[in-house]
Image (cartoon, rainbow, N blue to C red; front, side, top):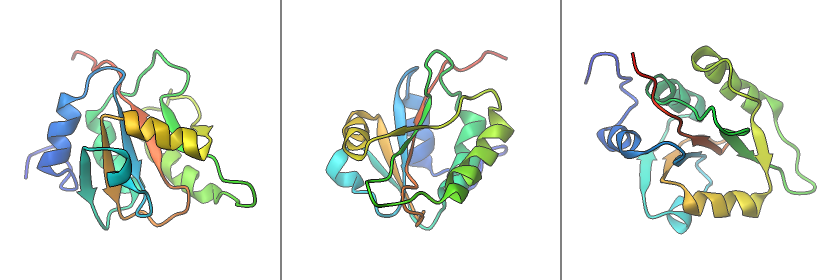
Length: 144
C-alpha cells in the first residue's frame, strides 16, 4: 500500500499508467469485453466496477485537453438501448477530478474494437453494465 494511491490500483496498473505518454489510450473494459482478443497488454481488475477504477485512476492521470474527445464509450447496436445511469456514474467521478472535460463521445462498436487494438492497454474490470467500456486518452501531466 502507498499513501495517496487507491488500494484498487494494482502494481501492474500503476506501472502501465506511468509508462503511458501523452496521447496514449487505456480502455477500462467491462467484464464482457474480449480484452485478450484485442490487445496484448491486459490488466485484470476483476470484481471492480468502472466508476471505482475511474476514482482510482483519475487522480493520477491527466486527460488530454488537446483533443475534442478524450473520453469515448461504445454506441449501442441497433435494437439495444443504453442505460443512462452508467454514463451518469462515470461522469460523476470525472466531474470530481476533471470537471472541464468535454462530454463522453460515442463510437460505433467495431470502430471501438479497432481503437481498443491500438490502445496502450486494456483493464478488464468486473463492470457488468452493458456498454460499460470507456477509453481514456492521457494528456500532459501538469507540473506542480
